Image (cartoon, rainbow, N blue to C red; front, side, top):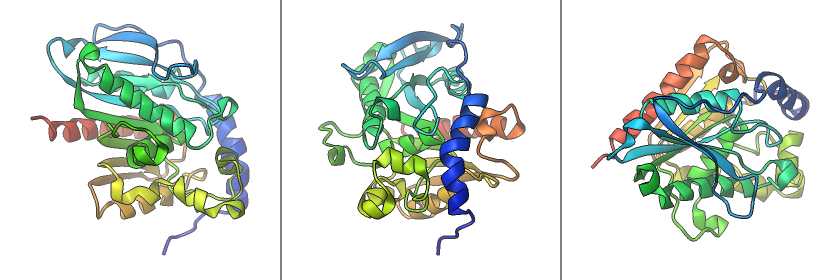
Length: 297
């Protein structure tokens, strides 16, 4: 039986109001990512023709010459209403991955103010992966080694993009995402049904369309999941840790899943300069290194 350790009233208020405010305060846009001797930066690359919001920065490690490298799409958080590829945590994660030998696509996607309701921004993430696949020779990418990583709402989008079959979203090409990692993700919208943020994202209340809440949940796609890393704080009051533990339990019979729980860490641990943040980034790099190494031919 799934445990419920949070108050619906608390989630209703905090997820939409406090989370958005917290991100605005602690995850404000940073300066554009700097060039480095470790990687080449291609800024503001469009991956979804006709949508000006859908751009991203591509980090190509300098060691890519003559080598095909694994790639990771990075998806920022922000409660579906805010955030960008220039957020501190998105840039830092991208730089860490690039310095570790990954081509990185740190993307913007449609927010609620730009028609970013379900499933539009999931499609955006999938199309970012499609862009990497189609342009693999240009960026020295191994087409068989593309993964995705996201934080909070971005973690939800990363999981859905990796798990939900492309055909279900009327995308003709196959899903190119082979691995997924998420920090503090929402995974079961049924358990978060009292949150105003979720109702706004889906365009309806739970009682109006229960089937949609199930359809839009990563837990509903356990059988089509890819190998996954989940990192969550035990004291997360915005997105309870049960969101990750329940997904791990659902996915485990079908594929590899690794769950890392941080004691005394809240939802914003990945936005702070704290030991848990450093450990989470290490877990992230190690997960992709180990996963992609297994797929080298």
